[in-house]
Length: 133
Image (cartoon, rainbow, N blue to C red; front, side, top):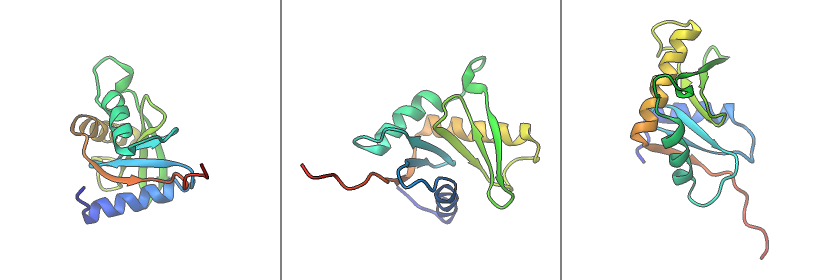
């Protein structure tokens, strides 16, 4: 996993947006985050399986739908899709405009790239230590 300055910035944004200490998540190269509702085993592999199914955009399907959430001016937006635990960050300088449509299309394109390239850049494993056997 190669961590760049941009990747570190996106990790920081997701750590602020997902402060729940019980939520594990995996970040992909273009800003898509898969929150793992039931983390088990290899978190990266679990997230890859989810994103392989719910990341790529397919014309005429629910995979093309999106919602836009303005998180904070400095942090940009979160673009949702057809799986509630797949979220994509869009920075303020990325879309060609700041209208929901431009932001949503940018986020959807980033999710599609992440869903086809499947390059994990960070795993936030927040599973607690194993209890006594």
